[in-house]
Image (cartoon, rainbow over all chains, first blue to last red):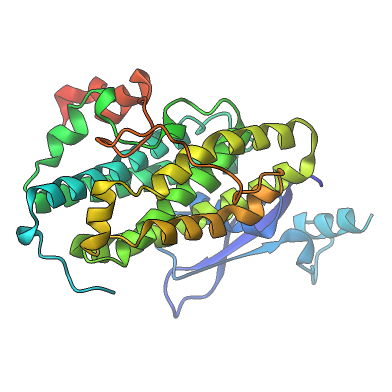
Length: 77
Length: 262
């Protein structure tokens, strides 16, 4: 079993009507630890909603030179 | 859920039993916070260190709420929190000393924090009104602790080698004392069951074993076969011994004594 960690991007909104915005990222070795790391790392607000997504699951639309494209390239190598 | 307890109607024996129960939970929470705080630095990653920091704060918040329940028994919690000797602490035995390695802390997250959650679930469903009102929020926060602990336990158990060995050793060392604590069935414990403050000992033990069975099996520990510790200090509802002096100095806030704000 791998102990290697992955990057998860963190999205959150403060209130029900707010847009979900990217607030940062955490390293974690699975979805469960990513949720805990996100919740405890970005605890400066009382978030209405928080989500995490593994960076390799994000599909870049118009740029192939940023961290999201890099993560997907590395995942498929 | 049973009818609300009329604390004023309790006799001396029942009041002492309720005091013992609250102190056992509060002291365990406070020491659990200290054991988390030992790993703010030196955890496997920055995120994990932040998580242990957050959990330490959670545990101290829970401890403060539990100590404040003593007011319902006309007991001032301030000297309880700040003036007792280590020999008077009623925290569970596995928290007496600093965790020697990360695997032991992971075992403590799942087993010690898990045992406390089992007891608090029973407490929240009982007849003591302050527990009904305040404990559910603690249990909601504990879900994050359990999630982190469970993920790490599976990871270390599956890694094999020293990680698996150390996790197994810590698990085997902790469970007998925790089973004795969760399954306390002496006079004061039965008094609390009869007053509807907590569920019966058998039910609590079943709940604890159900909570940890799948995890402990990963390190070849059959929780159903583990025998509870027989050594028992009825005054404090725990195995004999006490937390380290260094931990109690931190729990009492000795270094900040001149700056207390209550």
